[in-house]
Length: 154
Image (cartoon, rainbow, N blue to C red; front, side, top):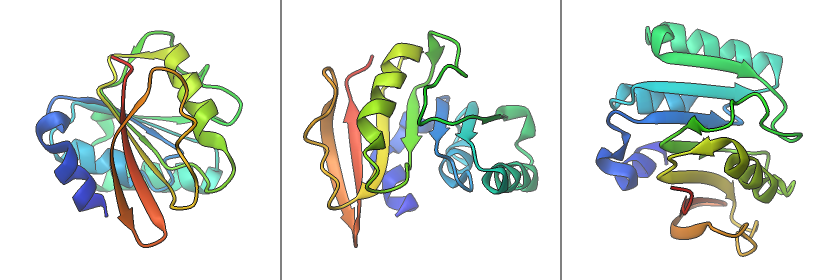
């Protein structure tokens, strides 16, 4: 699935600033770094996930191009400075908890320059009620998972 997501993104990853929300293992942000992104910010609030992200960043020797922020995204994204630049944003929130619309609103308040938002979510979780300004550009199904590619914040 990761390989297919990056095939859709193509060359957009090169020289990009990346934000990996609900980062888990950090796989998407680390993959972006390996494909030429200049910097990745990883945000998660689970101690085990944060430790795993740090370990994985260390394994690929990307520490100077990565920032790990412990933060509860379900409350807000005040951990980001207003106007933070993120070209590509990856989101993998816990499924079926209704976190996508609020997180998109938080992104609008704190980020600029976004070209693409890649959202992994349950196939049964609808993205028809996107906040104003977001467009669903593409959607790919992988078993019970959908990956939605959104634009609209530039």
